[in-house]
Length: 265
Image 1 (cartoon, rainbow, N blue to C red):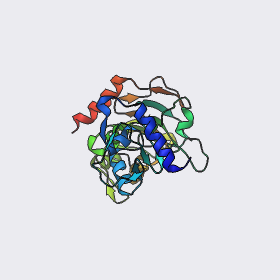
Image 2: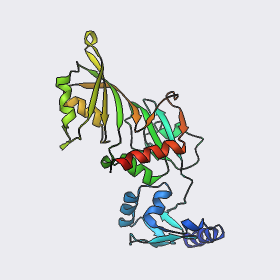
Image 3: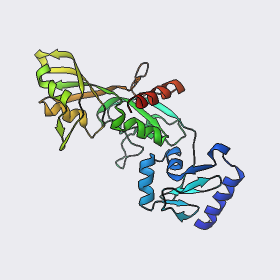
Image 4: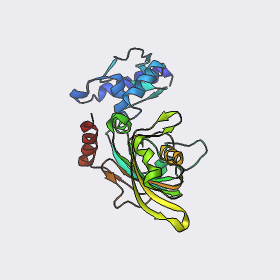
C-alpha cells in the first residue's frame, strides 16, 4: 500500500471510531504528549524540526489542533492516544534506563515485557545505579516530574570511598559547580562511617537530574562513589519490590506526585 493510500486508510479508520467528545479537539503538542511520545516541550521541538505531519501535511504552526479522525505522524510513524499508565520499577544495576540500546544491552523495558503501552523512563539512572525508576507513557507527567522548578525530592544512598564529615559535605548544601554549572542546594545525612575500611554511607537528597550528578557532587568534595542507589522519588519508595520487580502505580500515588509538584510552584 502506498503512503497516501495508507494515510487515507488510517483517517477512515479513525473516523469510524471517534474519540470521546471531550477529546475531539486538542492542541497537537498536547496530543503528542498524551500519546506517550514526548513531553509538550519536546513535541514543539519535533514540530519546529519538521518531524510532525497531520493527515500527510507537515505541521509548522504550534497552535495546530487535532480532531477525531485526524492522523498524526511523528518521524513518519502514526501515533495514537493510549490509556495513561504509570509503573514503579526497582531498577537493578547493569540495566540501561532506555527503551532500546544499540549495543544490545538489557534495558528497563526488558524487565516489563507484559506492558503493551509505549512506556519510557521518567528521567534516568546510570547503568551501574539501582533503585526507584518510574516508567510511563504520559509525556506531561514526565515533564512535571523531572523539571527542577518543581523541586521533587530524589533521595540517593551512596557508598563512598573516604571519610564523610559535616565539614567536607557542607559545600553540597550550598551547591557545587559541576560541568561549569552550580547545582541547587542539597541535603545530606551521614548514615555510617566505616573508618577501618575508609568508606562511608551517605544519603543525599537533590531536586535535579543532571548527567552523573550525584557522583560528580561527591567527587567535588573529595569522595568517590563506588555504589549508588535511588531510594525515593517524591513520595515513592521501593517497599516490597525486589531488584528487577515492578508494579503499577495507583491513582492515589499519581495524585500525590502531582500535588508535590503543585505545592512547589
